[in-house]
Image (cartoon, rainbow, N blue to C red; front, side):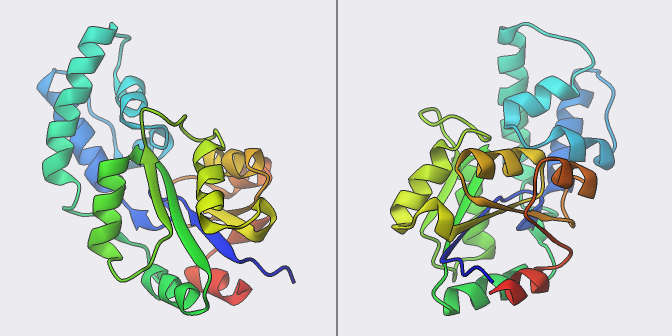
Length: 216
């Protein structure tokens, strides 16, 4: 069995169940503009490509950039008061991270969520885990599925791509791993389904955090 020395995790739908806080926040904004709201399950298909894209695909009509800027700004203000309301780690994740860290596995997070929120959530729920890096969406780095952030993390870890397992819950994560030439692992408790992960080349499929721990 291949021995990995590092793991890069996606955040939303992989480490943390953030969907209700995201859904509540978008719906509050949509309602304030008189737009129809969406159910939580619908948002599982809409998230994963940053706040701006999330709002754009949630609107019932195309709006100009100035209006979209305004809507995104309002969303950030709403999400800022909501993002810790219902969000929580998935079952077994804390134990998994502790287990991997104790084995000397280098850990990092790579998300399309804005960096400030990504770091705030990691520091709230996993303050005891020595992550090598926590990367969220930044102006100077292309979003996933670009391999840019994953490559930067590998460099910080001092590891080659071949030594790193990339774990996420969506095609964006599988594509990111492929673009970075890292092995791809899909989790089945997240926002997307088995078919999406298989169609995008997942090398491993995990039904529980314990199954990840068992790999190590």
